[in-house]
Image (cartoon, rainbow, N blue to C red; front, side, top):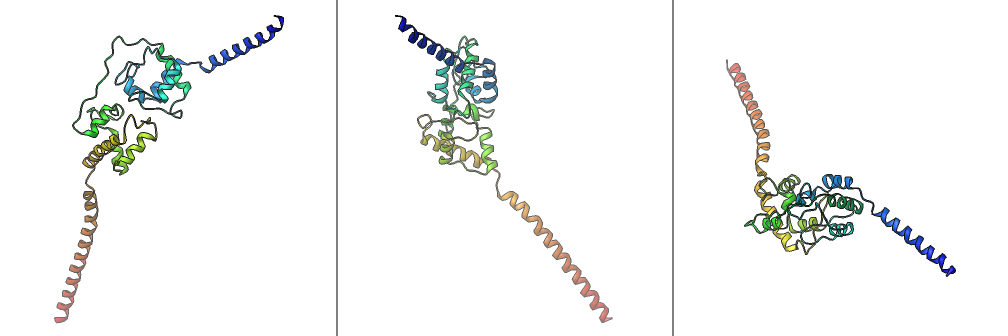
Length: 243
C-alpha cells in the first residue's frame, strides 16, 4: 500500500495540471466577445441581429451551446450558414463571443425573418440562401453595393466567378459549400447579376462620342478659318495687281 502512494500522487498531480491547462486554454473574455461580434465579424449581425436577438438566423442571446459547439458551427456550419476561417476569426474569439451571448437573456419569442420570393430564379436563390442579408439594398430584394462593385471594376459576372467567390472568397466574405449553394445555383446567380450590371451600366458609346466630337469640331473650325483668310489674302493681292 505504501508503494502505491507515489504513483497515485503522481497521477493526481498530472490530472490537476491537465485540468488547469484546460481552464487556461478555455479562458473567456465576454467583453472582447461583444467587440468581436460588433466590429470584426459584422456579417453575423446581418443574420443573427445586432444584439443576437435573431433575424434571418436563430438567436444567439441566451445560448445553451458550449464553446466547442460554437467553434464547430463556425468552422463546419449546418444549414445555410457560411463557414468562417481561422484567418477571419480565431477559436479564442469564438469562445469569447459564446461567453458574451451565454450571459444574455434569450428572447421570449422568436420568428425568423423570411425573405420574399422573386420571379427571377437567380435572385430567388440569393434571397432563399440569405445572401440578401449582407448584399441587400433598401429594397430588400436588391443586391446593393455588389452591382456597383461589378460596374466599377468593369467585370461581367460569370458562373466561374461566382463559384470561386462562394468557395474561396476574397476579403471578409465567409465560404459556402457546394451542398449549400450548388454550381447550378451559382449559374443562376451569375445570370441575374449579369443582367443587373448590363441594365445599370452607362452606355459606353455616349462618353466616347462626346469626347471625340469636340476635337474634330476644333479642327474643322481652324481649317475653315485658315481657308477663309487665305481666300481673302488672294483676293486682296489680285485686286491690287489689276489696279
